[in-house]
Image (cartoon, rainbow, N blue to C red; front, top):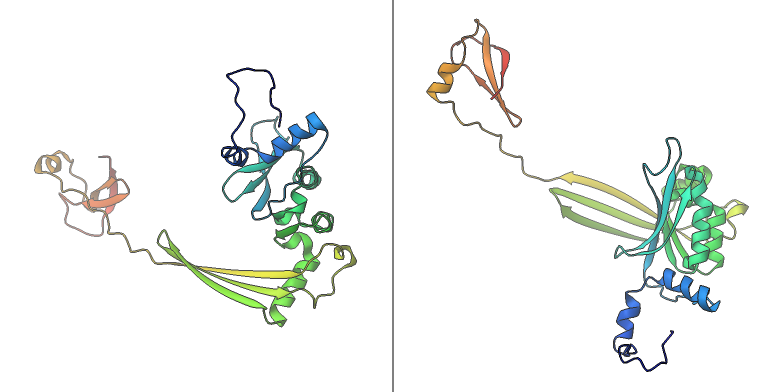
Length: 265
């Protein structure tokens, strides 16, 4: 911390009681870059209680047609952005940018969650060898390992299992989570330094429990409004449409079924 030593009465040192609150509101990544620039040292952050999610978001309209620019963000569960970096080019070029972000910010030593797009041996090895922990998805971009995980789920019993129910917005969502040990798998040699240990299988099922909405009803037409409607040929009737509600106005003809003529009201 830099403190002025001249006797300026307007500048007061930060109190010990206020210092933790001040540091808690600082962007650690920005502060670390500033300390490195001024003093040539980097401070390691040992706060490992929070998971950090890393993903890229496209910035549409920022470049000419055909070009792409993304912003790679590292966000904690409170919504605070702890690190970010720009990226230009196609989607595949995000992968080395994420690796550089993990290294420069020190997040490779912490707990990070990654999209399936970033799941590859080089990235997972980088995090594992730095002492970090990662959580990522497995999809078809790693087809062999993805199939091995599916076979493991089908042939072995889980180490643990939890079932959670959540009701919101007229729906009940049931989530079943199962944990499996990856030790029985014979993995390709390129995964040997990735520290792969546990597979979590999540199954989700949603039920709609909302009450059916009562059909909308339209106010009845007055005698004056009915008298203003022109008489239609036999077999035709006026249809009144208001905010998605439909009503047949049969003021002159009594035969059915009706051909309809839309009535703007």
